[in-house]
Image (spheres, rainbow, N blue to C red):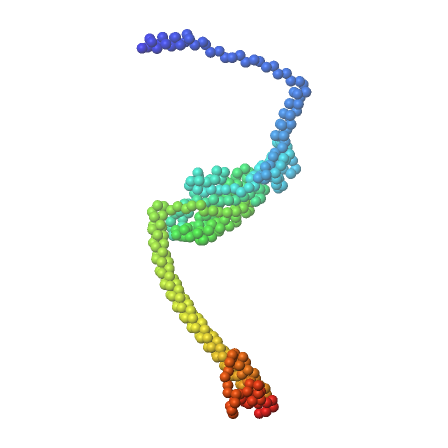
Length: 367
């Protein structure tokens, strides 16, 4: 087998040609004197820029230090964003951040902000003797860069020698006043956190640093203490739940009572309203009947008066003649009347005087 492998290897070596690097053509670049001079000038300008000028960014303070001369030392003037002339070897520009800085006291650095300074978690003893680990975020800024530079130092010494040594002692002094259960009481915890902020400002104001906020992110007890607290909280919650249920039952009973009383009051008012409507309808009917009776009486009296007046008119002058005329109208409907024409009761239709006497018609003016 070994012999066959050597034969195959030799055959492959015979087949493949040897590898050769391709030839790279040589490029001859010739620059004129003017171009070479321009390159030298630009290089000189770039070198001078890097040596003589310092750029202070918008989120930075600039503090100049003079190492030689009459006004040597740290200059009180604070330089803002822009280019600033620096003499190499004699002057030096130190830059400090002017935006909000974050200090994270945490046991879980991966949960903190990427750009924040991270330090160990605050280990605090409560007023009742237990220990609690508190994750805290401290937001602060440099208020006076000259004080920070002269009393703490350049660079990021404001973190190592400024805020970090003061943070945990202030938290222990203020949050240590709380009991184990007080940490679960948000108003009390926030009050002590604000006290910690004020205490840090008292410590750091003379060094040019101002703390804006102190935020408690999380706190942890030991597992045994945590379990006891949770059990006690559950019992307290159960008591509160039962009390709330009792109050709810009383309120529900009171509500039912109020609703029932309201319904009774509504029924009473409806009955009173119905009685009022019935009474008003009866009064209306009585009024209508009374007015109708009065009207009927007036009509009857008017008719009686009409009859009386008519009778009186018929008894007046010309009434006999009217009767005669009416009788004459009666005669109009008769085709034939047979009356005796002789004797005492004889009727002569041509004798008008006798006809008037027959119908008892008086002459005008007779009574």
